Length: 172
Length: 140
Image (cartoon, rainbow over the protein chains, first blue to last red):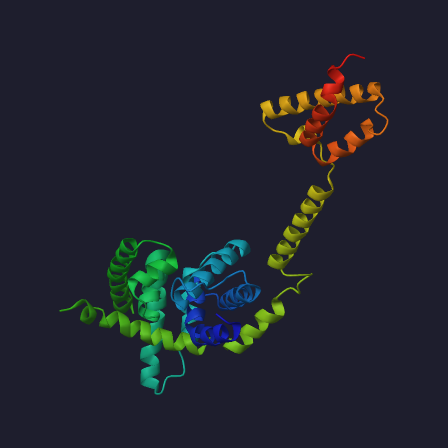
């Protein structure tokens, strides 16, 4: 794929890729931005080459995940469960009405807290399926696991997330 | 109730979180530009082209060496029987030359035969045997 057309396609996937990088980096916004930069840098340098064997989004998310794992390991950062909720709280504003804003704030905060209590695999699969709307088979390709395994994480993740959300709602 | 209907509650939570999160994403152009400026300048040729050039240079050196390397007739014969045949031929040829020199032919010397040998050892041997054998067998 020519670099110009690849750039155009990557631009269309950029927001989703940032959300994915954010999840892979434990909600660290600066690190997620760095990870995306490094991922694009590898594309530009020809170190990450799209060969058309998978969908572009699957390939890009795989690259972003690999870079994120390397960077998190390199920087010695650990995902913080408590930070994620607060980080999402800060991004929950700007709703059309105060009522909707309050509802969204509450939902985002609760979801952020609940997601961080899931296992990484469950969190990743649920993010890919519900945030990005990808099929479970594509999520499995991004994560480099089998479809059966991804489906198992998906089902368990949903069950655990519902339980956690109920607990958060009851607690609040 | 289908799976999709049962997942509606989850989807609503994720949709709300996604919108908030995506508004916070840095622009693609700024991230792309930063990635471009982050790239190290290439020190020379690209890696693949450099490899091809090295391969071509190695092939050229090998070809030149093969052309200019002194050929050894004895080592160029691989089969043992061929090597033995070449040895016999050389011995016969040396004996023939000695006979020519000792015969004092005048117009035909061993140099003539040597020149023929350069073109073809077998031909030279046949010639030498045809020309000098009757004479060689005659009483001196």
